[in-house]
Amino acid sequence: GLMQIVFFQNCRGTFDKQEIKDQPVKPYKLGQPFFTLHHQINLSSEVGDKGGYVSDIVMMDDGRLVICLPRQSRLLICNTDGSQADSIHVKGTPLFLTAVNNSTVAVTLYYSVCIEMYDINNKLKLKSISVPGMRYMSDIITINNKLVLCVYNILLIIDHQTGEVVQTIQTDCHPGRLQGSGDRIFYCNNNTLYWYSYTDDRHHTLTLPSPPSRMTTLKDGSLYVVCSDGSVQHVSSDGKQYKSVTTMGFQKLKHTLISYNSKQRKLITKHEREDNRCVFNVFYEE
View 1: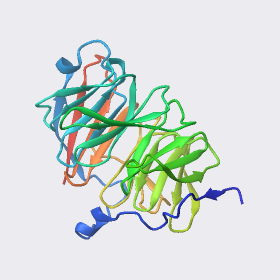
View 2 (view 1 turned 90 degrees about the vertical axis):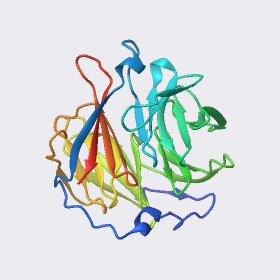
View 3 (view 1 turned 120 degrees about the vertical axis):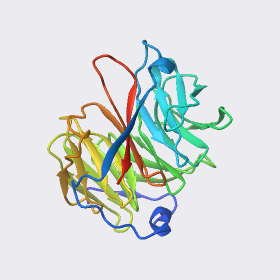
């Protein structure tokens, strides 16, 4: 067929459903408002006027935020209220990051074929993982304690402990943004949201009204997808349907970063502002 799956090692069915194990998760109603803006964080003084561009953000399980500042070659770390801001300086230009565990993040850098691992508690670089052929601007996610990134039209599953590629998944496009949910890897190209399912070894598609630019997975496995037209689409956990989100604060989110944490039940967004101030919105789940 069109899709050829090459397994270096059979990892099928190893996905961790820990979040779902903790308690039965009631599925959200698609598009219904269930987040309320709780507070804003203004990090303009920590970031400064120049080079305050934020390329990615992740909320850790303890509520801390890790923020990518590529023009300043550093990761900014702070609490959910913006307090106790601290930095890790990065050699190069950090672009995308993912939480690996409570204290570790993995980062991809602009024009680098390495993944960098950082200890955010001790502000240390733990290791570099070389990935030959890695794209110069690759998104990165963590699923079941493995890292996923893209090399041209291939998704690579990497064991961050050994640095080995344990699986490759062929796609029929160059994946843009990546997101994981349950046993699925979501990726996008143009207006199409694709996902690869481990359960049936197949790729599926859903056409959205506008190209997806950012994604985050919610507690029930559904996704919030920020599109290039500024809309936020709530995609069902089975990836078959979607509805526009009408929650106050979720309209016109063009060029917006978004990150949800199921342990904290909080969602953070950052959109470009005309005044260039570095402001984040923190939403609490109702």
